[in-house]
Image (tube, rainbow, N blue to C red; front, side, top):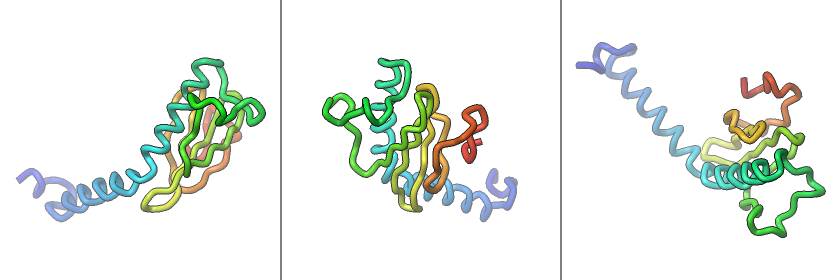
Length: 121
């Protein structure tokens, strides 16, 4: 009964559930690696109060080893873009000041404006 009264009726409700489920499955491939990279960089940020630059960040310390398959773009002391491959293509995750801003589809570069980071806003 509830599906029949929702927008699009039963068909619309089934399509919405299918699309939501498909999106979860497609992002599941990259999410563990992105999450691990996010955890590593969050630990660095928490310890040092800033994200590393390429000269100071090294995989030589196992505590800060990044997973294979995740691209890391160290934008500034305040921001990092992580990207990995999912079932629907590449996804980019923005971290600012030790917090996840969000994910966008595709390979997104470092944002210019951290207050309104495009394309994450």
